[in-house]
Image 1 (cartoon, rainbow, N blue to C red):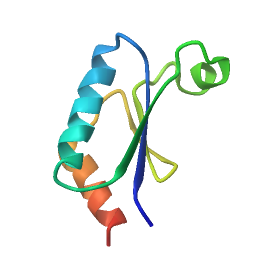
Image 2: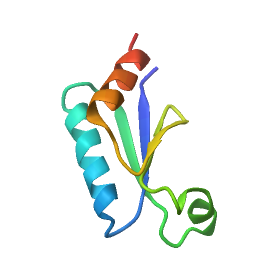
Image 3: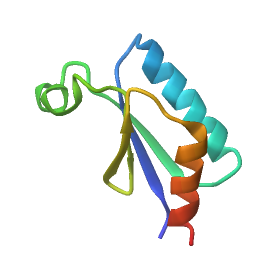
Image 4: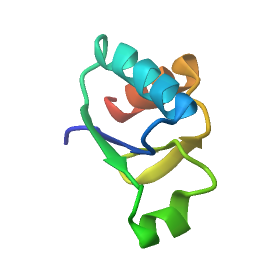
Amino acid sequence: MNTKVVIYSRVNCHLCEEAEKNVREVRAEIPFDLEVIYIDGDQELERLYGEEVPVTLINGAKHDYFRVDKKRFSEAILRQHQ
């Protein structure tokens, strides 16, 4: 099974851009599928994630919000590959 990472994000969000950068840097070393979903204008997604973006999910489970710690994220991705 491929590991899938989803980032719920917003347009013009500095924390979101930083989180996506960190995730992409890890992805350059450890392969996984990545999808970035912008919640702007989606009432349901804004209700679920609006106060916490960026929200990072690994295989559907919430990993983190606000920030992505590269070391912690890398370790979580590596566990998915075991």
